[in-house]
Image (cartoon, rainbow, N blue to C red; front, side, top):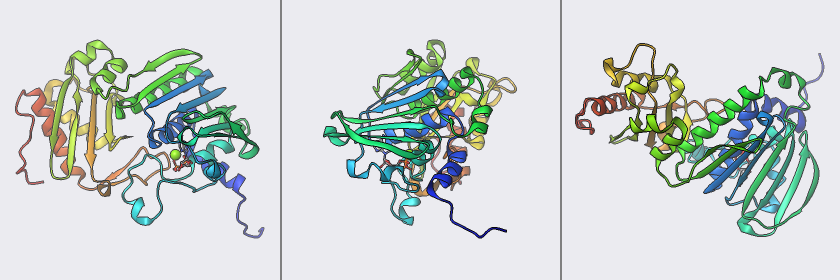
Length: 338
Ligand code: ADP
Ligand code: MG
């Protein structure tokens, strides 16, 4: 046996990248999360060849202080949490401090940033190693360009599917951000063709119409309800427009898209007999709750959460959806014994 040694940063970042950066869409997701956390109102995503050739995310957010540019690329370095207490009260999309170092370790990455529109800085990394650090023109926000993803991890490169499939994952991801943040103007282009462009008007129904089409949006009903712990609001699609996959059900918790089979079942149950077997409605649910009720530190991809009081939320959701389609009062009884 060899002696036990601590891995160097470059190797440990590549190992973390295995979890955080599964495919081009994971890069897009992490970069857009950072742009949202930076308070951007406009985010432009441009990809070439399904993200395999390049991914660029441009925002108009707060930017990164120039004296912190290198720190942003070191592992477990984050401006978003500082203590255990913060970890249980997460209000940002990011908190792990892993995305930038992981992405940089498996690509050629260029980041340009101007904090508060002041003098800008530019840093270039190849496979996680800094190549150059220069000035760049002042321009509000940050732009990250990721080229040749997985060029130094051949096994991962082989595992990727066609451009079409990878682009599909990217497009799904941006659709979810647009539904989670109707107040942000998103633009996604692929090889210079625009795939989605939202206005940032805060109108969720407008975003749903852009993603699912006019016909589906016309059939949607708005709902809202609350208990002491949760506020839910959103749109429930007509049973006529039901689809054969759960992926048309979108749950957003405090601005974060999450997957939840129990909640998908609650929505489905609320439609009673209206849905054909094996069909799911198009539905977008925004849940607002105290961050203490939700643990996002479940998986590096941050797509899954553990909820306290999940049963209470399931019940609220099921009854609210049922109310929508029974044309009954939308507000459920607050005296329900949860
Ligand atoms: P995390 O988002 O978990 O903090 P990241 O590795 O994604 O970790 O980013 C590291 C840090 O770099 C962030 O905490 C943030 O301070 C800064 N950062 C990254 N991207 C941006 C951006 N687009 N705008 C402003 N700051 C950013
Ligand atoms: Mg991040």
